[in-house]
Length: 333
Image 1 (cartoon, rainbow, N blue to C red):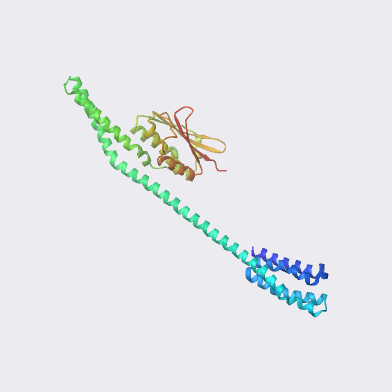
Image 2: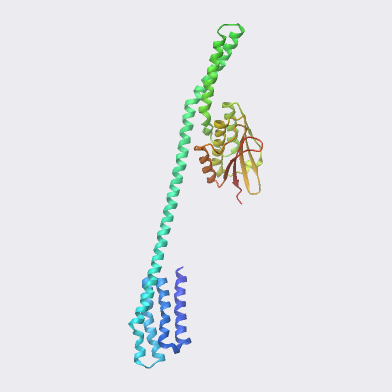
């Protein structure tokens, strides 16, 4: 950039000298007015120093020019005319001021942009940290509080059902009491399952998304009376490892939302590949999604994670089931 400016300044001088000495010698004093654009160029390129230096250099040039084309001392002394020199200084210094203001504005604008980018990155890191902390806290809390009670209740339910069967075989009058105990235990298990709906986020994320989805299927089917279907497709291998974490979090959240709000009997997780996109979808046959329902944190977090991998997230009715969540990931060239 500096070399270009210096070349421009030199070319300006060359054109001015060529114009002054060769093209219009008959203009004499008038030709000095054409030095004003030259001094403005000096002010624009080199600011105040360039304005003063260029103006100072044009004075001997004008003096030499006038001595060539005139023998009149009065005309020759016009090279030192205060009005002419003052005009050059006014125009050149004004140009230098304008250029200096422009550079300062650009510097401040760049500083502001860098500050905004820095703060945005910090905010993004903080958001990511809070999301991870929230999920970690939920995972650890659910895992520590619900696992043992769920196991004990299942064992107690099996015992109560066995007791009920024995009492029924003997026509014991307390058979209905045993049946009531079983119903109470079943109700408690159901409530624990409702509390445990977010525990699918406690699954570890493997680099192989197929392994993660298999673990998800196993855990959900153990905790809930439904089927999770995962479609086999070679396109699963096309997902880059740097997108696996965000994508699995989206799938976990979509399945969790379906369990919490739709009460489905079947959840299907699949992938479709086109020329430009990989479309990962989560469908369920439960209650349809309603856009009129006020969103919680789940959907915004899903959209946030989708944006981190350059994907688009959509929630709409499925052609075969009630609700379809789709995450479309562009295929890198």
